[in-house]
Image (cartoon, rainbow, N blue to C red; front, side, top):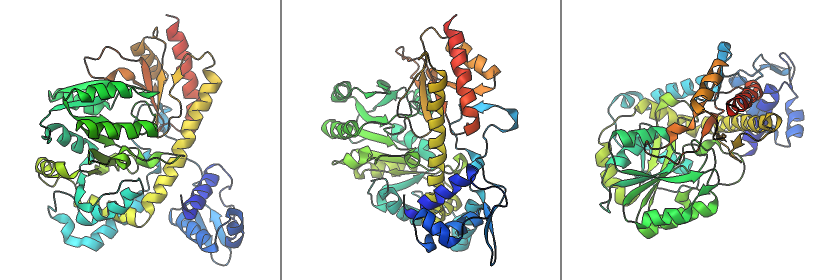
Length: 447
């Protein structure tokens, strides 16, 4: 995070946490520069952004003052419901005015070109912008190999249907894994098999045995901030997966949909370890902006480009949305919003772990450790009736997702768990919500 984004994020956090009350005067520009250890120009830029987003206002010859917008909006609304189920981003913090500005700017810049069919591969200027954007994630690719899709789901469906150079047809998926993709593969009758993944990782020996069998064209994986586990493969696992792909000529579909939301240590995707062009990198923009944008980017290896283009076939993503996203990335708004969401979601994840330490004293719930992004797995005692637990929590206005849907239909070796999502659970709701879950697990265990 550069100094400007760091200062801006710290200012916003202080305002949300009540460091300033409505009407309070903020430190002078010079004093703020001393407090944050940065230049005056950085403070002026940060104050300008806060004023533009209506968190503060300025009075000439006087200074900057707080307005009534200093705390994190509570998800859940007036119903009092605590939502640990939704996977969608918190729309209460969506920068509507920013994106409206980008839409208007895009129309001014491209005019009537945005209302044609455009290129099926995506807006050329956005694809060139994504070259530098993806490089921030250690994904280095030419614009010719970056294609825009109608969300990541479309890219995954194309990969499932299209032919691969090896002539193989089977797909290997993690279990538990992304439920929507599993249901799609089953509904289409495509040949799919599962391999177990736990919060501790994947059995690399088993993975090698499966890939060595010569059946699979594709291994679909979420290496980072996994849905539903919330965990991340180690660097050793990511490197090993890339080597196995090359050794057995199997392509990896790397779904890095949570790339924007990680906090802490440096992360290199499987793509960064790929020396033989066997990794397909997929990035979503829905989790950082809003689901209705329906834009994703896929980096396609050269041997698959022609087939992927043929199966994509036609333009199906709004050129206006693509142009607005390009503006949003290039003017720095995307980066700032990303840092804001990362800080907010990280605080909610910490609140879940803190609540577990307070209330889960008997250790009935086994939570996946070191989760980031938005998900945490709550493994439950085998004696708990999952359906009854979900129903009782619903009666207490707490929404959760049971884990049985994250497996292929025929899979019998399933863990009993809840997937906890914090994307729409307000910070002030988390402790009480976790306490209620622990209470109902205790109650269910006794039956």
